Structures are given as structure tokens and as C-alpha cells.
Length: 438
Image 1 (cartoon, rainbow, N blue to C red):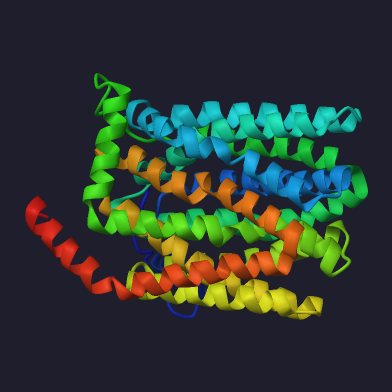
Image 2 (tube, helix red, strand yellow):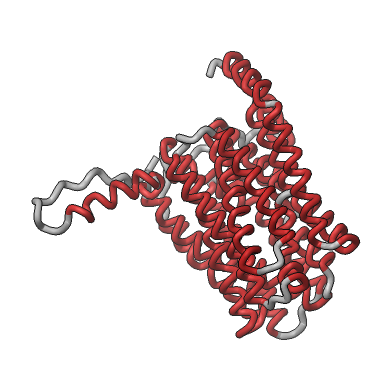
């Protein structure tokens, strides 16, 4: 494993004014161990630029569809279309990730995503964009993501040492959430100044940063473990491994419930912004950013804890915080109060999910990593279309606030069930460790 790791600096003579700065770097590396890896630093910089662009497109797409149709249902459909492929193609994506060099996979997927962003930007700028065009391009982007997302998660283990993996997973989540803070705010301004087409083009340009970073990253070649195995057998082995592992199975089932009923509220934020608070594009971006700021804070806290806080406590506490804050958000009548509740809900949600993702990464054997991460991401992202369709329909019939409350109530029930089964999970895990000789 090629991971650049800096040793402690020599202490300069006292009185030269550099003692504070010499101690800063070790303290930062202690809080964020993954930054000791040169490869991860390159990846972090390139990916955060690219993800800001991705959020530009996500927010601009939701706003464009709302302006074209005036329908909360079609906003939900557009959001669902980009995640549907994850449900059906993630398992195949996991097999690809376990068979071929992950860096090469990422270079291809990022290049194709860049091309799709430019195509959507061109259609929009030339005033020839239609709802079917948006849906088709969103679907194709989702197909690419079904391979790229498990590849990114698996590639983390190649960029950092195992001791840095918990930090790397949390910081990788922070990329998504830092961009969630910055991207929607920029998107709101760009939509007001240059329109949605300009936001799509800007997303295309942002992929250059991550492609350059990937080209500069140097990792040892990881030999594929299942090249000669039939793809269907590879998928069966991955599913069987995940299901037999008591903790992995519990995490995947819990994530499935939260993905359907918890995350779906995000698709309705453009509707809440416009119809509840009377906000424009920039105000909508502020709502997204508030949730993202809470999420970003949470991922840094998880990285700094480096697993020192018990995972069950972090997961349960995080989900409870998320659900209660989100329910409170639906009753907020003033924008500042709504932003506060969104911040708290983001803090809770990502505390739980960053911890669960890090736990999965640490538990899984490397030969199954791509397939297990594809299963995890399939239920996390692939089931979101179900939630998006559901919340869109309920919003049309009963109002957006009722739809969000229903989803969070079901998430709360799933959390209570998780708490009630904690002893059984611990016993199953102990039995698994004894059987596997762990």
C-alpha cells in the first residue's frame, strides 16, 4: 500500500515562533488520519470540486422540472429516475469493481458523466430540453453511478492504510456534504444569473478536477479475485456473504428502511421552498445547504472520533436526532427556524450513516468489498426511487408536510426495532465470530 505518511516534525528551537505551527500538523493528522495519505489528499481535492458540480446539476434539475411542470410528482419522478439504475445494476457494478482496476473504472465513469452533463447543458441552453430528455439523461447518469459509487467506496481501501479507513470513509462522506452546503447555494445564484443550462455546463467542467486527481494517484495494482468466476455466481457469493454476516445483514436491512422512508424528504425541498415559504431558487439552495452544513459537521465529528464512540450509540442517537428534527421542520413557519431544524436533522442523519458505512468497510473482506459495498449502496440509493415516488404521491394528495411526517415516523419505528433487537444482534455476531474463527 502506497500511503505517504509524514513523521513528526523536529521541534524547532524555543523562541523562534514556529512551535505552534509545528504542533498543528500532528494535531490535524491525529484528528483526520486519512490526510496522512498523499493519494487521499489528491482524491479529496479533486472529488470535492466534482461533487460541488454534481450538486449544481441536482438542484438545477429539480428546479427546471418544477418550472416546466409545476408538479411535485414530476420532481419526485426526475429524482427517482437517476437512482433507479442503482437498484437494478448495483450488483453487476459490484462484480465489475471486484474484477477490474478500480482507478480505471473511475476514470471511465467520471469521463462519461462529464459528457452527459455537457449534453444536458447543451439541450437546455439551446431551449430544446424536454421532460423526456431530462429523464433519459438522468437514467443514463444513474447507470454510470451504479458502477462508479461502489468503485469509489472500494478504492478508499487502496488509498489509505486500514488504520486510516474509518477516517477516510467519514471524510469521503464529508466531501458529499461539504458540496451539499456549497453546491446548492452556488446553484441558486447560477440559476438566477445564467439559468439552469449554465449550472449543467459548470458541472461538466467540474469533472476535470477529479479526473486530473485520479491520474496523479499512484496505488499498487490489486489483483482481481474472481475473474474466472461466472458473474451470476459472483453475485450469489456476495449476497450470501452479506446475509450470513449478522452485523452486515442488520445494517443493510436498517438502511433499506431509512432509504425509503427517511431520505425521500430531500426530493421535496424545492416544493417546500416554493410553496411553503415562497422562496426562489437562491432560497431553495439555502434549505439544501442548511441540511448539508449539519451533515458536514457530523462527518468531521465521526472522523475525529475514529471509532472511539460506540457505533450502535452513534447510529441510534443519530437517527433519533434526524427524525425528531425533521418532524419539527414540518411544523416550522419561519425560515430561520426551518434552517435550524434542517441543520440538526443533517447532523443526526450523517452521524448515523457515516458510522454505518465505516463499520461495513471495516468488517468486509477485501475480496468481497466491491460486491458488499454494491449491496449496501443498492439499498441506500437504489431504494430511494421508491421513497421519491411515495412522497411525491402523498404530497399531491395530502400535502408535503404530511408526506414528510409519515416517512420520518416509519424511520422512527425502524430505529425502535433496531434498539429492541440489539441483544440478539450481539449474540449473532459472537456466534459468527466463533464460526468464522475471527
